[in-house]
Length: 83
Image 1 (cartoon, rainbow, N blue to C red):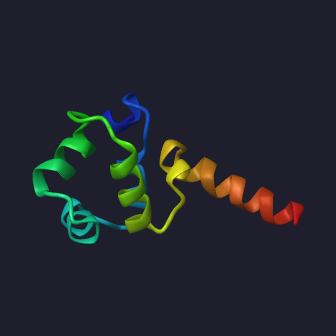
Image 2: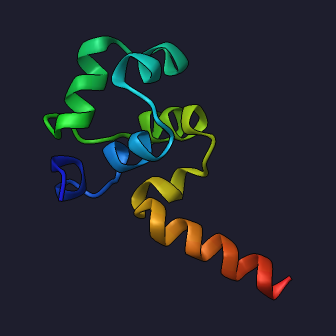
Image 3: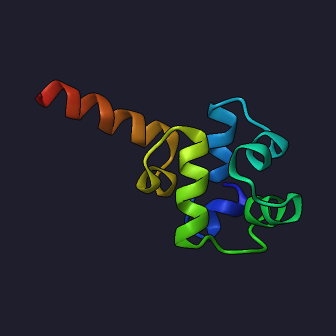
């Protein structure tokens, strides 16, 4: 379990799933290097604004950051099977 999941989100797991580094996220979100570092390490808790910004950069829905990539992808498949 990463430090991020201890504070309620899966930023590091999603970054790994998208093959992104903190620098990539910094560029895509416009957040500072320190802010991204603090969010990834769990030093800073996410806010609604950071959640939305990071989700947009990762091309996912904000709520998906609160789920592991594996679970979120399973939910997507299940939703598509129901359609």
